[in-house]
Image (tube, rainbow, N blue to C red):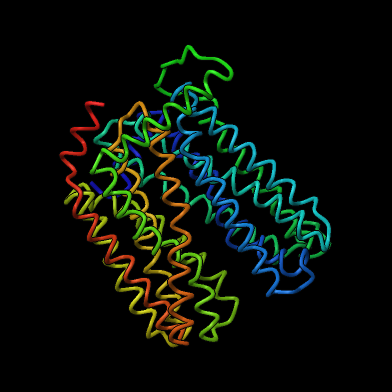
Length: 430
């Protein structure tokens, strides 16, 4: 069966899965249009008065602080959600926070960089916290044998939805008069409102769908917080005892750090080689366009071989792409690299999510995915630091970007130390 056809059959058969996948379509608009592209542009040229150096520094601090908040809070929030069976409600609160904050950015005036960054940080917390709850719903929305396919479908939908809205917003910003707007600045500010509406509209089906889980906690009020904290401490001890989960999280920390570092630093690396800044838009669109069908392809490969083998191949391609980047000399090669990254970016993240879901107790999914989210957020530290230190030591950006290979190699090593059969069997008994 062709890649994507199986996914379509599953979606048509089960509304619970359709609603879950649709949320990825919804929230990816924030990641692509706001986080990666237009917020940095407005921060530099409108809110920070055209000072790129200060804007970059301020954005880095805000992003790091929001990541720390989510990393520290996700496990406890997950414990509360599991205790009160409130995964969907937790998602609704976080998504609402992100949506309202995104819309509020349209109201920030010129030069108000501190206000803009504060609101953006709150939006990041809502977006990232919501993803922790969203991921935890995966085991409750489909059968175990469908998790790889459904997880990949979610990422594919995100790339398609985020890419379509991003392309539309580029057209709006490029032709503001066509839409009755005075100038490009007005169009850029309008983007925040349309992303908020898109996110809210397509998130609604999942937020009003309670799904399959029906367990309730008898606790109320502060008792839920107390019980949630106690459950968090218990699960922290369980994570330490569950060797397969611990080893997988160690592997994930390494290779996802490499992936996130490439996502965040690829454009900066291209600029350091003298490539024009317009490459940013082309590269983002190209990655989105390639990632949509490629993610379905990863799901197909996972079914024909195994999810672990497909994930390993994805990490291997990242190694080759990183090494190729060391010797890159022109914009065409930069675009080619963006296309290669698009081939594996969605699939590796999707299969990581579904493989982890197999190793954890189903009824504690929100809490365990809280740890998963914590690892993902803290992984935004090591890779950029490695690149920075290597560049400082060598004075060569090419050597610095090549250092990321170490993360992929170490991650692949620990990934192959996981005994998946033992992990799945133990998860089923908890």
